[in-house]
Amino acid sequence: MKLPFVGQGVTSASLNAMAWMSGALFSFCFMAIGARELSHGINTFEVLLGRSIVCLVGSVALIMGSRQWGLFKTQNLHFHLARNGFQYLGQYGWFLGVSLLQLTQVFAIEFTSPLWTTLLAAIFLAETLTIKRVFAVILGFAGVYIIVNPGQGMINANALYVLGAAVCFSCGNIFTKKLVKTDNPLTILFFMSLVQLPIGVALSFSSLTMPQGIQWIWLLVVGVSSLTSHFCMARAMQKTDLSVVVTLDFLRLPLITVVGVLIYAESFHPIMILGSLMVLSANLINVVRPEKSTAP
Image (cartoon, rainbow, N blue to C red; front, side, top):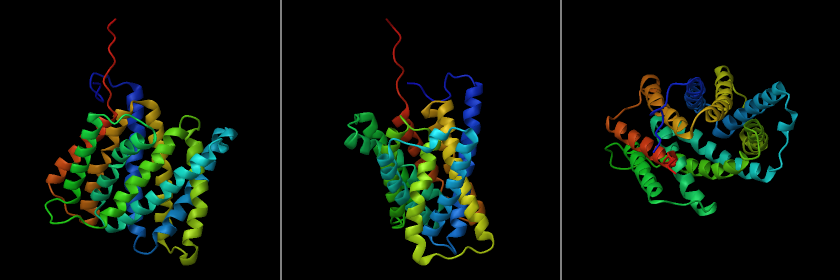
């Protein structure tokens, strides 16, 4: 079984991937901070609208800068519509969760998304659900339970918003798996913004309020960090194995824990470390594949 970083030299490609993943990690954290700051004065639909506007401008600028005009086109519009319908629902649940839960809990629940994808892929894509994958799913959900419920008597009902978001992200990932075979990541990013923008306008129109003062800055932070997180993650996946990306991506859980403790005085329970390791192990079990034998 090939594990990330084991038996591999630190190549320039590995360092490049680590650099891109560092950008993704900090982008996710800044997006969470921006969402938390905006939750005090702007509703979630308006935050998502502002995010879509910034992402649309950014993705158009990136495509125009590359001069690859064909990236504005797709032959799979129906997949983009389905993907971004689920993505929008997921983002709504995630942003709402950020305003109601500890940041560590939000990120931990979000990491169940690959586990849900495993189950949904088995149902809708006829992918094999092996004993190993079933064990990974059970282990991952057990780890999340420990993080969300560290010694308390009950699970916070608000966690259901983020759990629902994780399921929606997983549904979106099913369509993403199909799209990446034919569409450039920039095309996927462009249509993500293009499809979600009118949804945001429709849902926020009746309660639209003008941001005030520093809220403009936080809206810009959310939009830019959303764009850079997707772009950096895609670039990292182009540079190294998925198992390495999963390992590095998981570092945002302890990183956001530090942010929550230092900036928002959130509580931390040592047993959450055990839960985090269980979730990481589950995701690695899901993506690590045994090496094929080269024996004749």
